[in-house]
Amino acid sequence: MQNQQNLEQQQNLEEQQDLEQQQNLEQQAPQHRVALVTGAGKRRIGNVVAEALARRGFSIALHYNRSANEAAETVARLRLWGCQAAAFPADVSEPGQIERLFDQVLQHFGRVDVLVTAAAVWHRKPLEETTAEDVRRQWEVNTLGTFLCCRRAGLAMAEQPEGGVIVTIGDWATRRPYHDYTAYFISKGAIPTLTRSLAVELSRRNPKVRVNCILPGPVMLPEYLDEHEVRGAVAGTLVKRAGRPENVAQAVLFFIENDFVTGVCLPVDGGRSIG
Image 1 (cartoon, helix red, strand yellow):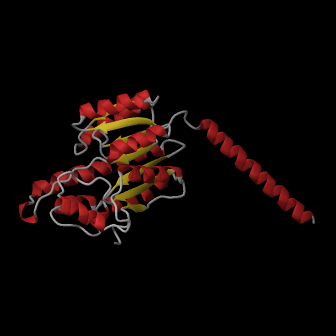
Image 2 (image 1 turned 90 degrees about the horizontal axis):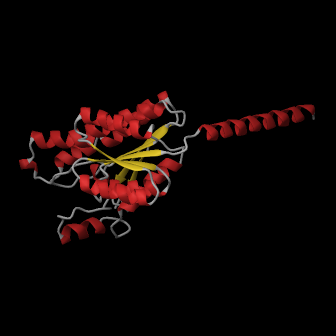
Image 3 (image 1 turned 30 degrees about the vertical axis):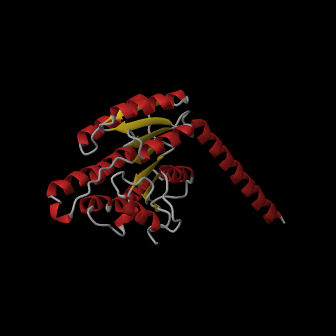
């Protein structure tokens, strides 16, 4: 009986200590969380993700390359919602510009809690016409740019007691590539490995830094696709319909809110990858 009482007292003490530790963490937590979304100027996936995060109370650092007017319009709209928002230009294929981007974001907001790497380029070109420069350009933006952004953000997050969350954007079709996008798929094929590697690396520096990847399917089909190609993309899904950028935003929110998920690559493709 005495042993049982001692065990219960020990359990109660541990529970009280856990509660006090949680309360201390909550008191130390920042008053506002900051999300940096790359490639969020134009009305594409990154822009929709930025709006979804703003609705969840995040301050938004909106990255763009050439879409200055669209980025300014988005920032103005977010501010009308009561969101702290600012736009930052950078060519993510240039390491120096990435460093400047993060210097400006950290100077403006003081921290970064979420990074979503939606900046990307893709060019349709037959294999016979694909040049070394095509491969190089798409690799520099889609692969190197993603890595450099993730490294800078991840190391900054590792210095924060609360850590942070990185969400990379890959592509479901790196598993089953379709024709005329060789250079693009080479660049995007590296993103899952990059994600898992950074999840391991950054967890060693701060286990509260998590890195995951979203593999979108037909959620925002290119405007230049003809009707036959659109029907084919939709027919290839199990749900027999196109998705929406909001489906990707929902996945981003899931990765942020579920603190026991890291190193995961999640298809958001309506079953396209197994259809």
